[in-house]
Image 1 (cartoon, rainbow, N blue to C red):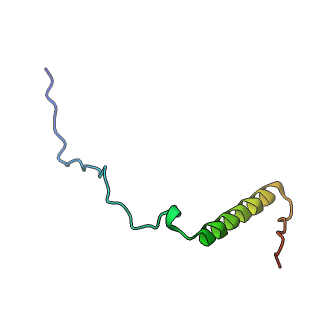
Image 2 (image 1 turned 45 degrees about the vertical axis):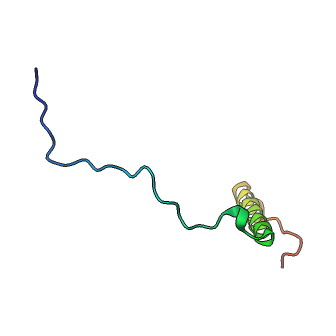
Length: 64
């Protein structure tokens, strides 16, 4: 039976359960903040698609 040599280095155990972060929950944000974030995300996505397609960025109502 062959002998198994042990590595001189000790294995590191990964942390499986980390303490929760102190980040605000989406549901606890005021509705105005949620709406503003969604508008900004939609605008960023539209601009990204426009750049990928080579089209000029579409202007939203109210853009200056």
